[in-house]
Image 1 (cartoon, one colour):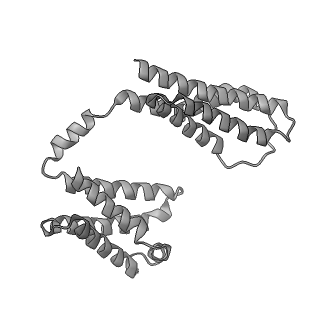
Image 2 (tube, helix red, strand yellow):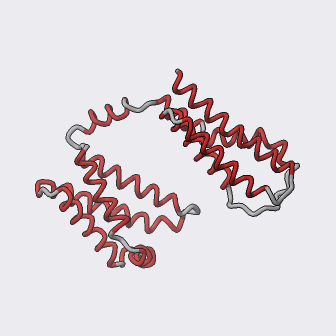
Image 3 (spheres, rainbow, N blue to C red):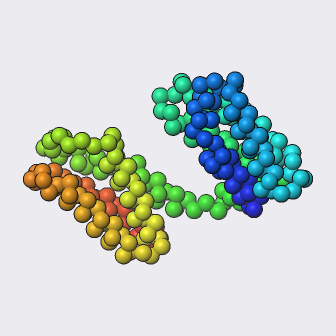
Length: 232
């Protein structure tokens, strides 16, 4: 575990600390002809050796550096074909971390992976998945018949309400598992204050009731999910 942690630290430093926006922009424009992609590769090699502080890992450092170069190069060429530009970044990071994992546990890869999978709390994963997008869709279906009475004349970020709801439900479930019910009360109070500031000038009773129903449904489902998880 310590080896993987050190490799992950080297990756974080190389990708997010020792890489400027100038380098990123130049790589996106020039791709394989950019000198910065080679600087970036050398930095990952050097950081890996420096943090591991043991020359017996030089092969791992080379494997990580070369794979990092190839994965980054692939990302540079395929990113323009993606409508969602965040997706190539996420895939890129997953591939890098997968390489680190294989390098760290290549000796007992199967045994460690099996133990890792067996340690996953399926009930917890199910609870967290349920309060994310499935609950968001469920609430939107419940409120669908009421939305026609709401005038959508206020500016808002696309899907902002959905993501806020998902985050708050994840927090609620987490705090219930930790036994910190008082924090849930704080979350409800904080959201009420923000919503009050949004609604105080609108004088729109339908909108107020619509938001109140959505909020109560969101917190109610999250609390029920957390209680079921901790009680079963």
